[in-house]
Image: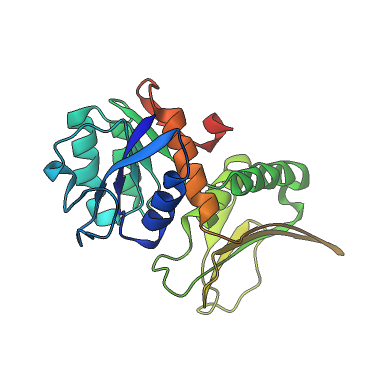
Length: 248
């Protein structure tokens, strides 16, 4: 049994994680962290990680970027492995995650879905085969409550393509310029509306043909399942930075 400290337990994803964990016999939500301290949860909820005096096996974080530094400080001080699922992080915060991973096990992925990470691998393969002969665009769609744009997953896909096509650069907005698209752009577009869980499409547009690679998330449960799977995996791992490639 892996005991989990769930940070952001009162949020939408936190509630899905808690609900999914309740139906499993290999994990347990030992306690939650949430500023609202929702008393309706079937486990104790604290305003901060520092207020929790117990000992969890793994932290799962589905909270807000503003709380990352304090949570990682707590994780290091208690030697607790951490699964970081919060999105919208800055480059400085990602650098902090990497430094923290030198001291404790940290699992970090822009998307906890196995399917999305397979999409990432397929996009890299397509970029290797098609090279610079095809124009590349990434389109992401999410619900109207998502505050960051483009999504972390869209950037993850772009970064993966850029790793094999280093001459590329990202373009987020073409409204302020009147010029033809250059051959090294990766266009990244965001749509926000309704209750869209998550849609990501990578487009390779060539001469007389278009290749589309896409993933459609139909429920938040797939992200929660990935987080719980990561927590079980991370338990008892050595210090280091892990991601979905290690899991699958």
